Image 1 (spheres, rainbow, N blue to C red):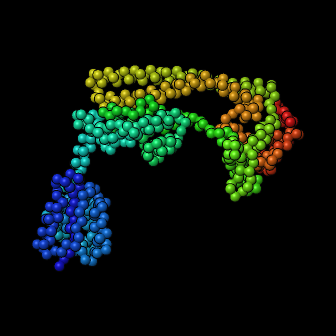
Image 2 (spheres, rainbow, N blue to C red; image 1 turned 180 degrees about the vertical axis):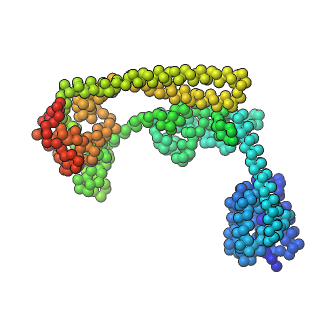
Image 3 (tube, one colour; image 1 turned 120 degrees about the vertical axis):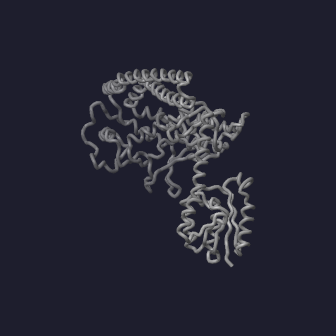
Length: 517
């Protein structure tokens, strides 16, 4: 007696419940096998839709064949479209089973695949459902696009929304009152330019916004949260954004700020530094004199509750210094030179020319931006007139208006930045002169991030703290020239001079005079 596996399948939930009855297929196959004297080894039932053979039950069928292939003669199903609706994939699987000595056949459309002519009919049986699938796919996509152009939302609701049907029965979204406020705050936080996308995600993850890194990026780039629908380009239609039937979570102005930041058009603001950063500004710029590893720092709380800060090496190394002693010595180090008053005036004039020398080009750019803004405003009015006169349809109107408004937002942001720069020039000059007048004073009055930049600009390599002085392999060449002529300078020793240009032994440049403490 020959043995067979019977395979029944429906491709959608609707078919599983209403049509192409699975029990009916099984009954027909059992009657056929009984009539032909074929023994049924196993029945595999599938209610999973897939264009290829990556189906749960079919994968189990393949595993079963690998174990019992010598006992199997047939794989039987009712019709070829129950086997596959993909012609190329069907040919591949049929060949694989044939090589194992197993015959694949449909009892309602039987073929003798050992005869070459049968392949013509096989192609017909396979291509008809494939063509029908393609037609259904096109009709579905066209229907979805028509619905989306009317403001409907087709698909799974994004985070912060729930799928919903309005009073007219149209598919749309409603706000998830628990998650939507977190989404809104995430947009606002990221638009400020203070936190990175990952920092925003971590901030709200513990509050209930359980999303991964890429999901957070997708959320912040999704125009659905502004109450709009993004319709991707298809065939000859361009990508467009239309007004949706669903409510917005975030306003369009904040959304555009977020997009500008993703495009790199908005500078990231300086992060606020914690107390430990302020107390340990040299962390990351020191290395251990014993093991050569980077020295970090931390705080410990005393019995009276007061926090004490220390620079220290890794746990296996016992190097440890009081932070205030290390910081004080470094501040004393910065007092070792100063700039003469006449040279300070010269530098002030140079800085003034540097900042204000391109004033004409800035003013020219401002005038150009204003002209472009006027042109775009006129274009917006023209688009509205064409829509009201029925020259363009609603979707075209919304797409053109959205693109025009985006350009206007970019130009207005640039214009505001240029005007702000003009106002801040005096502040920049004052800061530049204060740096030249005394790095020590600037260092003491600056926040942690500026202190770190000052240290890095003077000492490109890490410092070694030696109780009453510092040691370094190299330093900024200009600073090295200044310090090389300090007869009373005892707080820094250069262990190794630079290979390309050792510390100069000539007199310091005009305008710089050493100061003995």
